[in-house]
Length: 313
Ligand SMILES: Nc1ncnc2c1ncn2[C@@H]1O[C@H](COP(=O)(O)OP(=O)(O)OP(=O)(O)O)[C@@H](O)[C@H]1O
Ligand SMILES: O=C(O)C[C@H](Cc1nc2cc(Cl)cc(Cl)c2[nH]1)c1ccc(Cl)cc1
Image (cartoon, rainbow, N blue to C red; front, side, top):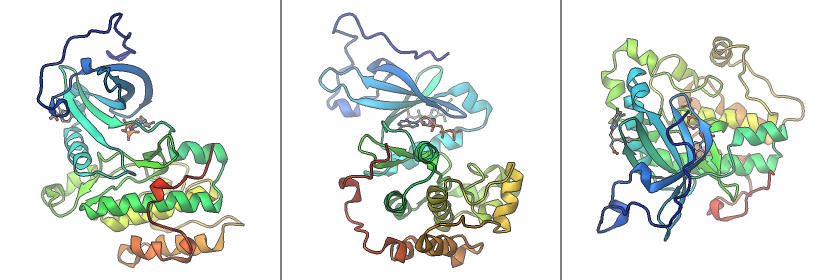
């Protein structure tokens, strides 16, 4: 049960008039500014609802991520909430999900996010089995563009995986889930976190996790490069390169670099994945190196978000 089950639209058009504000954009929103709709999804600490802004002049639609305060405090996740808010507020890119407002009431915290209507990349790779080489090239290119932008802001995502690559109504990506991101250098957490707590800084699911993150060393941009290599493999092979029967087995495969290519895996992609999935983070190609790889020969990198996306539906 969530207190914000679909709100019946008001019988009459007038609703509690919002407090006057010079620029309504600056006014702190409250839950009553929105008509909440269906559940879009659930996280470990969150429920995401469809929502429409009550303003008849601009009935904008959003995805509102609602977190229970008591649960957040009990699970010691307040740091992740603060990081997600700060990182999302620092990002403004067409391939990264936008944060419009944050506010709270007695029970909950609210992130009012850009709505991505077409689900996520994991859903499509499960539905299709695997992507064509062109579709994989397009989506990995959009991920590279989005991640390059995030890195240019001094942020490492640290949990890149197909379920964090949402899709908008034009089937372009919206990179999301920045609660486990790391702000480079100024990230005091790494400096001051005692070794014991560093283990708790472990992020995300195992399949796309880089060896250096598992060996408890600081994550860096090359950890995101490793994850992109895993995603490219996954889109073309239909499953991630490292998948054990449990999380521990998956970790073992990663640190031993235990993976192989299925027959028919395209050779240029095989060459690129092999260059990216190397244990030594310093030996991994940069995102610029990857852009220049033969797998992307002839790919036009400018304004990809304005060009038609492959139709996976
Ligand atoms: N901007 C969005 N637009 C549309 N759907 C979204 C959006 N953000 C999240 N969702 C949906 O809500 C679900 C929960 O997202 P949320 O970020 O709250 O948790 P999560 O990160 O997926 O899970 P966890 O917290 O366990 O990592 C997602 O799986 C996704 O399906
Ligand atoms: O209104 C703002 O933007 C600032 C607040 C700050 C804030 N208030 C909190 C209360 C609790 Cl109980 C937990 C966290 Cl992490 C809290 N963070 C806030 C509210 C909502 C969200 Cl999603 C993030 C931060």
